[in-house]
Picture 1 (tube, rainbow, N blue to C red):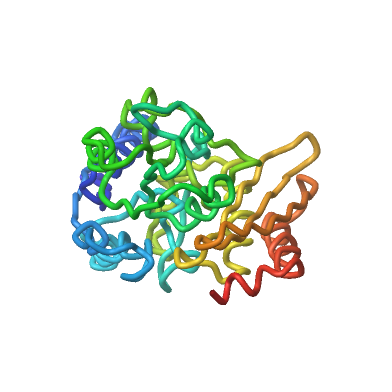
Picture 2: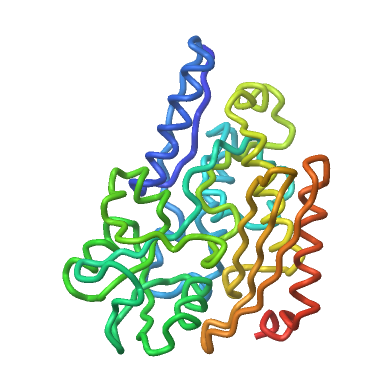
Length: 304
């Protein structure tokens, strides 16, 4: 039987993404049987501490990669922004799907925008990148760590634990919760995480059969833009312990990359941007913007 198995986390959003990839694969290959292998990762189990303290977003990948290595699964489907900048040896990204909205969303029961929040309002987010940009805009806010899946976070907001929270627009829209976004925190003024809004498919680097099966799902524009964003972050040696943001867009003549390094404690933000022609290398553009950020003093923030 012609079967392809997808390793996935069990959160509602992860399952949506895996089912979306499964449906795309079935449409591209009518004779292919696609099965899901839902799993719980260490990142899903440890919810009482910030991600930066327990090892970062890579904690959401390990069990899935083990399943691929042991041939229990052929691919894993990830939010690309959650993938480490350097994959474990033997693994590769075989496809990047067409990108959804990369912006963050301001979510609140009472308030429509950040500037409507009263002084001392409590805002929930576990992202140091979001905390840095919130402090830059509103140093008077009280920022509180917020973990859990999307529905858990919304439940805490609705229960009155927070005056507002910040979530990725793409995740809310994929779960049919786009109406919860009161306002978009839109780039280039507010920058998302590198590759936010994009879905990536991970596989064994030597698995040519699977690579051929997922090839029709690959979106070259999304791959170029996310490659530039991830190259910038990688060159800065960025991880979730440092507030780094990146957003690349296809302009009329090529790619335009915006980058940011921040300080989540003070709200200091260092920004840089760059552009390249369409035939230019996205990775080179990422390194260029990273070097500009370092020249502007980002190194001190990166060292903490």
